[in-house]
Length: 175
Image 1 (cartoon, one colour):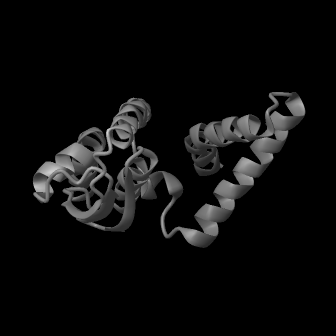
Image 2: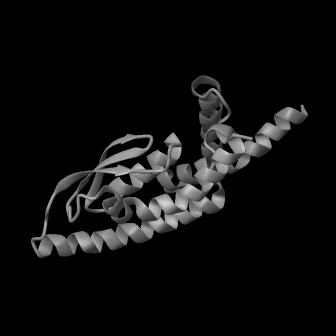
């Protein structure tokens, strides 16, 4: 019984996020919507843990709340900054589209997917392929073919936010 209660307590933050997302999608914060979100979120978490993951969700996809908040804030800033830069490039007719291979120190599939998604969400770049240790990106301002320099310009801020947690989690896993 203690194990069951412990697992429920561990899942509460994830369920709370799923309920919040459900309420936002439903455009309602009524009691009925909150109950629906709780039931659906719990069901989704249980099914995901039992049918698709080899380990529990919390162990499989470990990221600190602080890192997640920093990631979202950096993402919002980069979307606006890149949007303004993409407008400038377009208006001044300086478009120079190219495909670049970017090396990364991130080997965790979840964190790599977060970086790939962030690259695609920022105007002017689209991730067309990701494998651990490498991103392939279409870039509308291909001002350099140097992988390190292009990587810093395109993915640098996202990687810096996620790398400390990736290295810390990796160190914890190897103990």
